[in-house]
Image (cartoon, rainbow, N blue to C red; front, top):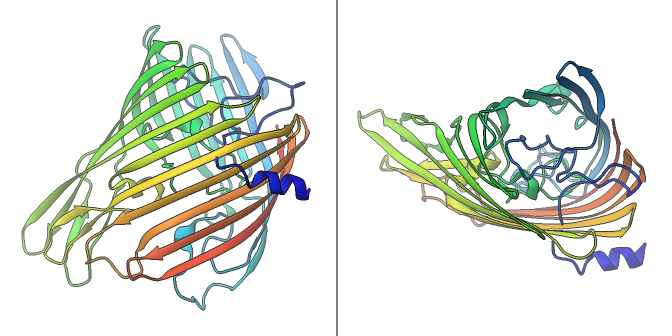
Length: 397
């Protein structure tokens, strides 16, 4: 084990997705820990076969998994069942334990997938308040012709690359990875050979920080507009995403301020040696913090609206020690800039590190151990960090 852990440290990147042993079905292009990318993306390989029933031209599949996580934090963090560095206090918080142990099965997931002349996908998990069942994905899509598909419903934003998601035991995933599920209408055009472009109109959900002493209301008066282009090649793919939106601040003094937001994301996933894969991503723009639940803009003390600029990078590598043993190592960093009117404890920078070892002991079951570290610094020049150890056991069906 010491030799394996030592070897993990030499890697600098992890690819996505849990893989099946060679004797099972071919591995999916993305892990079953997330919904399959809408089939409007022609590079998508079908996911692991699920329980299946046929009804005329349609097939109904039941999928999901049961997952148990055992988590121990060695320092203070607000998110005890997912590793979100933004919840790490930058000064001691008496309401958060100094260390904490938790066992949870709230990531357990259920999905229904209907395929045929049209495609409908619905998925949920138990990560709602009080372990309540919550909606993750609910969309339908159909082919307009041989090259164009239309999607409507809730799923991953067009801005992100769902195929460049690293495999972590942690439910949160790297904070520098833009990742939201949102209501949208999307058109995807197949360019052949795994290449495509997509455009979408999506739900705007941009939070605006209003400083104390400034009175007014904020609103999203335009929908998000997203676009993406995917270039596929023998060793992998490169995908570029773009996003724009707008926010408004109606000052109590009668003035109105509008501000346009924007963001760019470039992601790649490539094959390296044998089954190994690498992922790299760069994301930047005014307001892109909203893709991880952060603030998109801020109001100055003078009543003007400015976007919160963020620059983020992520790298990951997945290595197979054998057919049933694999490791991932992931690092991400994100830094932002905001006006002086924001509260001093507002997050300025975060980083996220994860390294794991996963044993696929059965075709549809695996267990793993993961070490995580994260940190947060604020605009008030304060700092906080946490180490976490997580063990997981998952059964797919």
